[in-house]
Length: 498
Image (cartoon, rainbow, N blue to C red; front, side):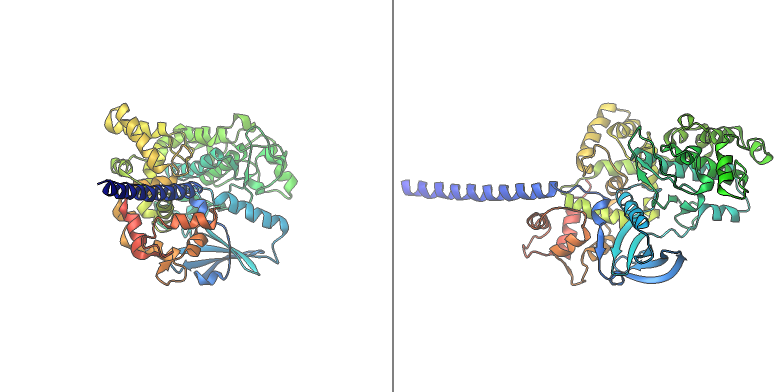
């Protein structure tokens, strides 16, 4: 009996050791996972190699002194994208620095009204910036072709532009070159969204510090930029000029001058044309808003956030609505790993169509009360309280939602995090999208994803090989060091909305 007891005890000890090893392994995996924060930037870094391995070259969209912009098609997803090709021989040092600055800013931007950066390549001859393809053209170009144009349309466009700026300013980024040619339409659809582009002159700022570099397009420069002492309010001035221009067809100051100094003198005069027939026939609210945006003293100019609450915007522009269906999906979302969250963010950012995102985007922007481009717990509680008419229930649910969604532990929910969690499962995890996502990882097309391929696509994550191996074990059920399609699909579908 004693010997039987000894065997049982040994067996228990062996099971205890196995359980300890399993627990240790789970701890190591959890530790490795915690070392990377999930966000759009993990997929963007400077890559080398032949870009034609991944893209089909199509028509030239534009050419400049630095190179050209070309329409390209991503081989794996089939998506059309825009590729800016920049010749290393032709680009000046300061232009190269501006390009890398633009990439650094764009890769971290996550907002529906800002152009999305997908990839950055280089070879011995060129740099290649790959962004979303905006085939709706420039805003001003579209407006000149319209037979009828009214303040309601202008307010709708300006609201989206200012939403993008409010997000930028909340992230401590000044655009510094707001002008009509940097405001694009995503598509030819009449309801197409606005996208702000060209962050080559944008810069991060510190609150309370002023900028001194004169940079931007002369016709849209704020007086204080010319005086080399300005803040993010210079973007508001530029938008005031744009709004005046699209509503009247003119500039608020005399623009037909023989030299730049005369133009600057006219801008700095502080006297703007608010008496012309074109201006005085505008609604009182439109006139007052333009005057406030063109306040000579930047301290008296309203912020982008404040303008979004202006009576003219409120009355004329379409108000986004909160979808109860979207809130229901958001409340049901469950997630267990950063790896799964990263793949879902790739699907949301690179595979979902703008049409599939429209209702989600509208709900997101409607709940974003302070217009900083992110959702706080307080903003979510407010939305759910309206649905449940029960604040305590709303707070409990919101705490659960943040535990599942806030993958980078920022204390707020970003746009892409929201897309992932609020999209219907049969849309974001349809077989077609899972197939496309798998192909994005499976670079060589051999039907399995290797550790090297995961490291290549998630190039923005800084962890070592051992930690990568531990992360891969989340998917690699047969322990062969690779991820088969079935393992990939199973991981994405295993944690469903309930």
